[in-house]
Image (cartoon, rainbow, N blue to C red):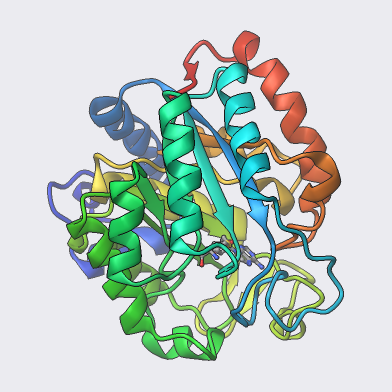
Length: 344
Ligand code: SAH
């Protein structure tokens, strides 16, 4: 292997594909160590701890992989009303959080005017930074929400392969997703995108394109998570799990290792970005994958503050229920365990 491949100033697509294919253990270790160093050089040692509230699991979309898709009749739907959302925000501040992420399915019950009111009230009564993750809206709505005080917005592009995107999102357009991301950037939001890794039909080349797209769009926050099949979705049956992961375009692979590589490479390519170690990691195996991701380029963790009786219904992927309990533990244990963790 070309030794200089890991430490470069600029990476082209072929470099990224080669890094994704690394199989030599020593080289992989070197990649992870370099990613950790780049994280420290550009973002410091601090791990940002942020709160997330999943305020509605209603969704008008039918993404083939997602457990809260419109056509899934098996889940109980809920909405948290504006007054309650505001109470959660006050609680988040009391708990010491400095950032609150408000996430939901794509739910137009919450009009831009309603959201504006919620945001203004939270911003007037707390010093929280607010992130929205509510899907696609028009420029005018994004502008209203920005003027109301929203600081950041998360909207994953999920995959940059236009054909795969179309297959997975029957009622959405890849071009609109990208337009939304450009709109958010132009409006001055700290903008987050991201992908799922391990999607059936995904190729290493498309993952390399995803990483380059983060850079082209000047994305500030990048959520990289494993695709986890949900039994009540059309995509689940297409997924083969026994004996490791197999995707025809990639072959057999270890999803855990692929995830670490994607995080590490994203770190060394994009340098000054926020990379959360998402909770989905811990569904993959019993190892503490999230902890490991934090040593391989990730620098943010998100803790769920949604009440436990609702949490189980925001099941975008299975096993989120069991994770919910783990999250609460994490909050208590955090301070003693990690001196680098800060509520930011
Ligand atoms: N509706 C919002 C966000 C809510 S879902 C939006 O469109 O942005 C948040 C994220 O969950 C999605 O961006 C997707 O990447 C992830 N997700 C959904 N189903 C998943 C699955 N089966 N496995 C892993 N991640 C999943």
